[in-house]
Length: 338
Image: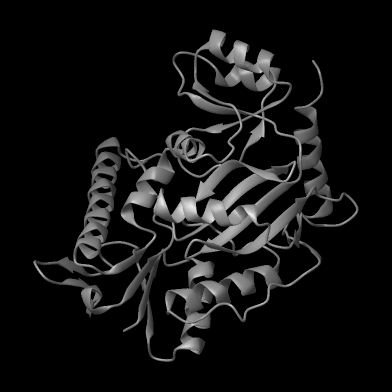
């Protein structure tokens, strides 16, 4: 077996990746899920890791999608139920989560190629430390503050014309930080948040495989006259991304991933890194291109002949125009002075 894809059972992105990889190498790819102990039989022994009867140690490359690290693992969002039962299920989730990461570590120790690595997922959990490593490597990162202390936040916002925020851990989007956000987010009895200065320039996202950029997308704000979210357009691969890719691979251990950045004066300003990006909700042509490039790279096939699509495309949405208008109005209200 050349490739095993592990994912949550409902992941459409992983399912589509499996279909593309299977077309490229028939009979050499399997798709496994990590749903629950009742559905997935996983056995870790001294020299084997059996997953539903398949020994992953014999698989050349194991690609894991959708297993984001969390410390501590958060309980599932469920309705009101018996407290003792809720605790028992949460402990069970924690133990299974710990087991999956232990299994991943064993695969790496045995010499299997695991994408993303356990270390990459650990680092991605706490974004501020990763951004500091990027900065130390010489790549530009906006001014940052991780705090829940009012005076520090006041000083930071006073020294920067515009500021955005996001949670310090996990995967999240950057959002506008104004008076309303400061009033509701900043307090000593609340978790710290990550603040960043707004660097003026186009918002871009770049995808890398093997430390090399394969696709750069420029984002466009939603247009009100159509039922769509952001628009995306591929651009030529800037030369500065070669340095970013080398840093991702050599310093951070990321071979496959996405970088969110702003381009200013011919240089990237890094806001986010993701070693396990969700790209299935991109416009179809761009998502298909990433499926093809990623599956070829995971199988050890050349990717140089693949050509990314060009032109602006809108990301589709299930929202009707009225609902989308309400959401945009809510976001705009955050920018209005009080």
